[in-house]
Every structure is written in C-alpha cells, then in structure tokens.
Length: 395
Ligand SMILES: C[S@@+](CC[C@H](N)C(=O)[O-])C[C@H]1O[C@@H](n2cnc3c(N)ncnc32)[C@H](O)[C@@H]1O
Image (cartoon, rainbow, N blue to C red; front, side, top):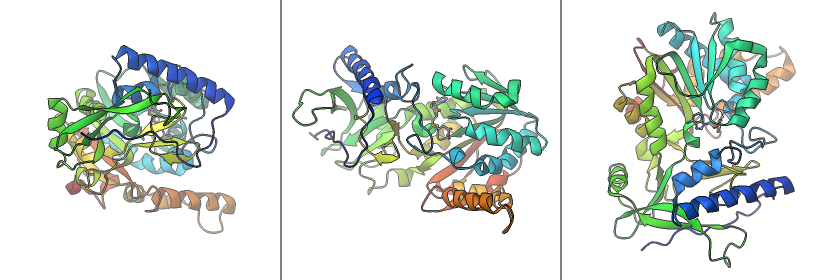
C-alpha cells in the first residue's frame, strides 16, 4: 500500500493578511462540512471545485484580486493588449468563415482580453457581439465595470447557448477546471487522491486537511491505464471535467471554431515517466508551489492541460481539430511582430512592448509551454495561426 503525500508549508511563502485569514477560516469550515457530509473522504476533484468556485467563498468566487501585480498570477491578456490584438486577425478569419460577428469568451478574468480584442476586431471591420460566460459572480461584476464603455455590445450569458455560430475563446480556463488526482501503487493498481480532516495535528498543526487514497473505480482505472503505463509511486491527473466541457462544445457549436489557449502538453509528454509528481500547481502572491491543501480559498489551484485528451474529446463531440501550435508560433503567424512600434517611435511604449513580446514568445516564459488548440465545425481552409508550426501530428 502506498502512503498518501504529506501536507507541507513551502518555505518562503508570504503570510496572508488578517482579512484573508478570516476568509480562509470560513472556507476551511465549509470544506470540513463537505468532507463530513461525504462520509469523511472527499475526492480531490470535489475539493478543488469547492475551494475555487463555492459561491461567495471559493478562490474565484470571492472578492480578492487575483490577476497581475497585486494578485497571485499574471496571464497573457494581463501582460499586454498585444496578446488580444494579435489574436484578432485569427478571430476575424473565423468570424468571416462562420458568417457571424459573435465572439463568446469563457472565464474572462478581469476583462483584459475583451478590452483589447473589441477595438482590434473593430479596426478589422468586425463590430462584434461579445459574449462572456463567467462562473464567478465577483469576476462578472468586475468585467461589467471594465467593459462598460462598450455598452450593450458586451453581454453576459448564464449558460452555454443552444446553438452558436462564431468564435469561442478560453484562455487559461481548462487548467482551472477541477481534476482527478491519481497515483499508482507498487502492485500496479491506480488510486485516486481525496481529502480528509487532519487528525494528526502534530505534523501540520495549522492545516485541517490531509490526503487519503482510495483504489480508483473500474471506469477511472481503465481511463488512466489507457493513457499511461503503471509506474509505481507516479502521481498525476486526469481532467474529466475539461474533457466533458470540450465534448459538450460539439453539441452547441454549429459553425465556427474555439481557440483553447493554455499551458500543457500532448499526452506522451504529459505522462512522461520523469514527470513523477504530475502537474498540480498553486499560486499565491506570485509564489508557485504544489501544496493544494493549504491556503484553501486564498490561492489558485491548477493542473496543466493534456491536449491529446482535449483533441480526442473534440473528435468525440463531432468537431474537427483545426490546429495545434505553441503560443509563440501561433502569435508569430497571426502577425504579433507587425504590432511592435518601429525603433525610435514612441520609445517608452516600444520598451514596454518589447518586454511583453519577450514574455509572450520566449521559450523560457510562455512561448513554448503555452499552446493553442483550435477545434471547430464547418470551417474551410487552414487557419492563419497554424500556417507554420502546426503540431497536430504530436497529439
Ligand atoms: C486562470 S483564470 C483566467 C482568466 C482569463 N481568461 C485570463 O486569461 O486572464 C480562470 C478563469 O476561468 C473561469 N472558469 C473556470 N471554469 C469555467 C467554466 N466552466 N466556465 C466559465 N468560466 C470558467 C474562472 O472563473 C476564471 O475566470
């Protein structure tokens, strides 16, 4: 029998302020209730769902600042409007091919991507209807304030539309969907990780939660075994919610394409034998670590995306896989370099642009780890963003 991982407090992690501690205690109480209601063991997927999205309490659903300098992490739209501006030609092509002017963004965060895209698409002749579907009431309110200048051109949906023609966007949304954690024991049996109340207070006195393992159900075990060989002690994730979300796109996306942008790998790389602890990651005040059971409700929890699983889910949903490339290659193909001021022109702004360019494109930053997967239906011809460096054959 394999031992569950220990909960540890990473060295150098900042201490939450007094208000955050009060909020954190309420989140812990809610999670302990959930564990008790579930009979003493809650799957990590259910834990992550509540820790991130419980209305009024979860990390994304409560009122803290999450994005950029004063928050916990920085996404590409927060780095620079260049990101949205360079997506615009690709979105324009999809809108043209689908005879639509509608863009639907999932999980729009602070609204930064929409704020860059709407004017950029307008400049390309698309007076778009911009729709947003956001789980978090707090983020929705922030988006409504930020995007007020565009009035009724921006609308918020409460559920996915029954039928949709146009372009769907999801930047760093799949990684925020709750995942199933698993590990293999010595005898080649997969176990799933869940959360219990911590009764061994001597180890982690401030953390009321502990990991506990259960043998995976036959269905989950089959899914895991189909993706990787049994490697004793190896821990990783499988994101069934994200796969279901992508498969479901096939029910309502009639004509158009979805651009799914996130950090991740093809399956062979995702379950690489050396990635022995998987990809679970948390962010608190720009510190990244792998301790998901601490700072409940105060920190972001994510896993990388298995893009092969996403492409398979799209095919299962009756969609085509239209392209797969690194973020760097995609943004170069859509013309990011053309947006940079010439030397000598608007010098301070150009310096900011060059810093952003480095973060968006560099292999050491977002350029290689982040990928763009395009899936869709009834779209003719190659998509602009994948004209060079399309890596669909790696999926
Ligand atoms: C890491 S943030 C990214 C925000 C933004 N897209 C950006 O790039 O700055 C994840 C976002 O996804 C949202 N989200 C997660 N699952 C979702 C779902 N099933 N439908 C809509 N939004 C979702 C969260 O509420 C949050 O706004």
